[in-house]
Length: 173
Image 1 (cartoon, rainbow, N blue to C red):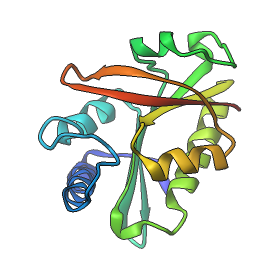
Image 2 (cartoon, helix red, strand yellow; image 1 turned 180 degrees about the vertical axis):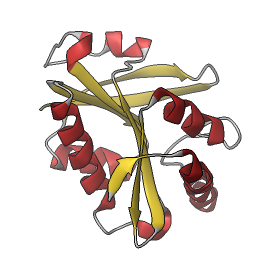
Image 3 (cartoon, rainbow, N blue to C red; image 1 turned 90 degrees about the vertical axis):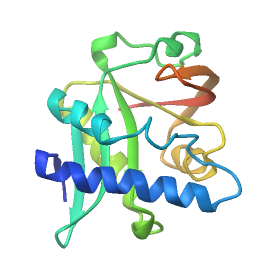
Image 4 (cartoon, rainbow, N blue to C red; image 1 turned 60 degrees about the horizontal axis):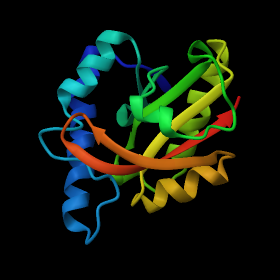
């Protein structure tokens, strides 16, 4: 079940961030380019919860995923040659979609993306956008399979401390 997050979910969501960062530490190459203690953190989830944009996924009483769904497009999005232009109020953006590594390989990320698309349609959005680190092989393979178009990549100065190239994807809803 995917539902709006509540305050009691925050420790579990922060725990998933840590699980992912620990998996990154064990891998020879980073898929996320995230930084422990800087992004994502409990405060990341708390801010989205307070904004009413944090969603969580649970099954059998265990929280296994979370995502932020809003219309916030980072300034770097202006450098992307979007095929599907849309007024800012007609665009939804998926941020910080996470699935616990313990739940990997079960199609949960695909389910979460489909949920975000349905939720955005209910909100009257016409286009979904998202970005992912250029080195995130799993995400860069998944999004095109889900009908997303690679609109381009550009250097971001994410959160004011991470220089990275992010691939930007879009899909008509």
